[in-house]
Image (tube, rainbow, N blue to C red):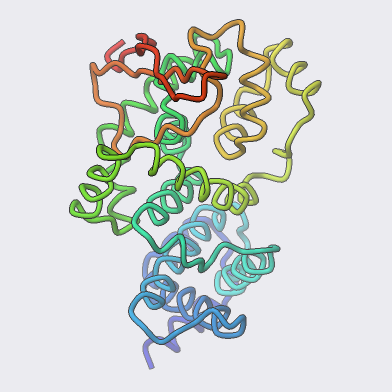
Length: 309
């Protein structure tokens, strides 16, 4: 009976932000149950559901994700009827072409890590900036060089890295549900055969990015080479660059080619997976892969930036 009352309250009109915050805080468990239930329903209707613990965890994880997005956007939609707004957000999300939702390859520890990290990046600028390091090995200075940022924007990057190192990464790993044992297992694989892990990440990343790029604002589409050149030449659109390039490897390759003369390194946009955040005072290095020889010989890593800078 209590749940029916709460859901009935959520269907009533909310007129102020304060009322929205108070109501959603009081009914958060009901919102989560509702979102997880809608996720189960969608997966059943699309033939992607099985009655096992893995799918239950998936429904709960997507329920948390949907409610979190609802809480972020809901305050700007007042006056509204919260339950209807949540249902609208869920319907819009699941009506996207080729929704990620459930893919067997993303149930592996590496798949969950990439999925969860990118999902967090949609909501957190710290996580978004950290993608440049976790996926490609770009340290703070490398990000600044790649994006051609000015002094003010550069300081934001250093603060993003610091907050991510201090609290953001651990929060993301907890939300993903990654255990220390799973992280160590991936690290063992990486130490034994780094190319194997990078190749697997290279296969999964386009799938993840294609999905989460739809979570960007509609004004963040892919740009042509000429449009990227204009953006860098005139020195505007920093937020556009940070958001879109982190979630689009193809455009990142275009931007890298444009910015090549201003970069310390000339390694290209290659997957260089890092499972843990850049440590304070640690030097971020790039692998220089010799092209043309076919033997995979690595040149010595060069210093690019330090986290304590």
